[in-house]
Amino acid sequence: MSETKHSPPVTPSSDESAGPASTGAKWPLPEEAFWSERTDPHGTLPEGAKQGEPEPAPEPERPKRKRDPYLDNVKFILIALVPVGHALVPTLSADSARSLYIFIYTFHMPLFVIISGYLSRNFWNSNAKTNKLVDTFLVPYVIVEVGYAALRFSLGQKWSLTIIDPAWLNWYLLALLFWRLSTPVWKRMKYPVPVAIAIYLFAGFSQISGDFSMDRFFGLLPFFVIGLVMQPEHFEMLNRRWIKIVSVVTVLAAAAVAILIAPRAPLGPFYFKNSYQDMDLSWYMGLGLRTGLLICSLALCIAVLALVPRHETWYSDLGTRTLYCYLLHGIPVLIAKEQGWLEFPWLHGPLGVLAISSSCFALAIVLCLPETRTVFKWVLEPRLVWLYRRPSRS
Image 1 (spheres, rainbow, N blue to C red):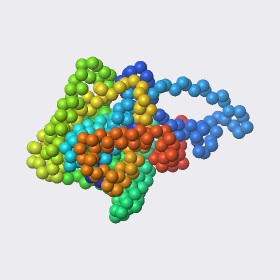
Image 2 (image 1 turned 60 degrees about the vertical axis):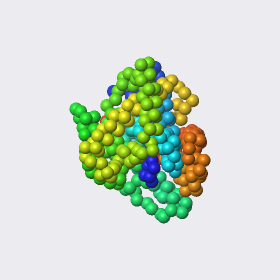
Image 3 (image 1 turned 30 degrees about the vertical axis):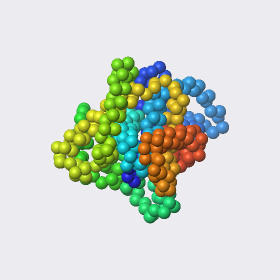
Image 4 (image 1 turned 45 degrees about the vertical axis):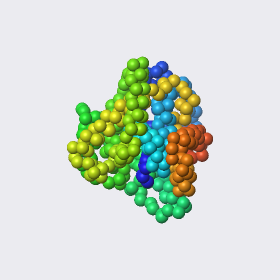
C-alpha cells in the first residue's frame, strides 16, 4: 500500500482432504508430524516396547493424495499483485497507475483474507498447526521487523524499530495471528457474518491504533469470517458458465470504474483501516462508503474466484510458497524506491505501468520458487520442535 505500513501470506468441513471445489483432485493441508516417532526430540520408545526388543513393523504408509491446484492458483495470482501494488506507489500521480492501484486494492487483500479464513477453519484441530502460531507468525514477524529496520537504516533512513507497530507489509502476520486466535469464537456463533460486518462498520467510528495491526484486524474482519463459514460446495457453485460470464462483466466494469474515479478518488478507503474521521466523512457517509466498498470487494472476489483455472497450471506449484514472496518482495521494492528507480518520467504512464507490472510478476515467480524456500526456510519457517510439550499418548 502507499504508506510505510502496507500490504499482502496464508495457510481447509469435516474432511480436509476434499478439494475446495470438489474438482476431482484431493487437497490435504500439509500437516507436519512434529511428534512422530522419528522426530520425537526425547527419543522415547513406543509404549510397551522394551530396550533391546525389536520394534514392531511400521504400518504401510497411505499413498499421498494429490493436492488440489485451485486454491494454489488463486494464491499465486493474489501474491503476484502484492509487489505490483507496492511498486506502483511512486507513480500514483499518473492516472493509469492510480487506476490499476485502485482496481488491485479493491479485491486482492480482501480475497487473500477470505482464503486465509477458509484455510483456518480446522486450524485448532491440529497440534502442528497450533505450533505454527509461533513458528510461522511470531518468530518470522520479529525477524522481518528487525531485518527491514536494518535495511531502511542502511538506505539512509533513521533507525526505527517498534515491534508492536508492524512496519509496512508485516501487518498481515499479526492480523492473521489475531484472526486465527479468534476463530473458536466465530465458529460458536449462530450468525458470525452479520456480527463481523456490524463490528466492521462500527469500527469506523473509532480511530483505532495501528498497534498490533488492530486497525486492519477490524477493517478486514468480515472477509476472514466469510472465509471461515465457506464450504467446498460454495467454490463449486462458482464453476458454472453463466457465473463465469457475469464474472467477466464484473471485472471489466470494475476496471472501467477504477479508470473513471482514479483522478479524484482518495486512496484511504481502499486500505480498510481508516476511521470516518480520518477520511473526513460524516457518520452516515462513512457507513455508506464502508458498506458500498464491502459489496464491491465481495463482488470482485467472487468474480476472481470464478475465473481462476481449476486445473493444474504452470504456476500451481508456485502458489504453495506465497509466504516467501510476501515477506521478501519488500527488499527489492524498498531498494528501488529509495534509489529513485521507480521515479523515472517514462514510468508515469501506461508504458510504465506495463513495465512495473511485468517486472513485479517476474519477481513473484522467482520468490515463489523452491530454491528460494530452500535458502530462506530456516528464517521464515523455523521448526522449533524443542519449544513445545509433547502431546500425551493417552
